[in-house]
Length: 317
Image (cartoon, rainbow, N blue to C red):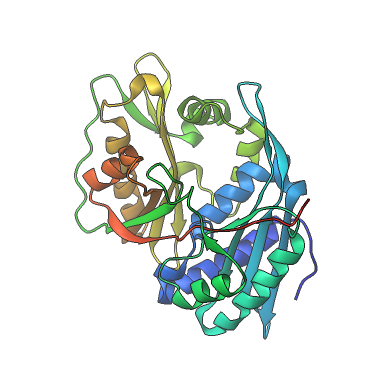
């Protein structure tokens, strides 16, 4: 076992390796923040601003990583509109290799010890019956706020890339890549789609540092006036021949014009040309968040699995 440390790029690469191994045998047990692409995205965009509030622990067997926990502790978040938000609770991302399932108890004990005085949340896979029982045994309960009609639980969607429709953009719009558009345009595209956001030029530098990032698979749609109206990053897991879209966003002034739909189709065709046979994308699954789900269903994705949000009260006060 490694000591408690900030999450490094080398750690992320180890975690991605475990994600690839679990994806190959039990993809339904890959957590919403434990996938190959999500790990790179989360570390890249957040390490500069939030890395000091991260803690991690790694478990090895015979030199192989078999489990990890990544705790996101309370912190102050500054957003692009100048607002500040205090995050008062803790959140855990984690993964345990199925043949070492018993380690989930050690992960839980570590998390409770690391964030014992604050409210704790976690998102185990709904398909992982063993883990759900262990979390319950440690006092974790279904999170009513996350499970509400406008809650924050995540649904993973998938499709194969055998037959991908030809994308069609409105007149005057065109596809380009981040390599072509440059860092400034790529960052602005994200900020426009997700405002207010914590994303910065430094965040993008972190994303580009990850081994999995490819500028030719970071796609944008340029409007006739030069605005980068829609964007997405594809993360290609060559071992499993899978492409993961994360994030996907469109400028508010350019929504409902079919841009994101065309971009996803274009991306899947590029992913197929790069060797992928399968694609995934996550979205909020609650009834009150139908937009992204409808978009993904319109290009052939279907629900594969989901997470089960749990919560445990803190002990402070």
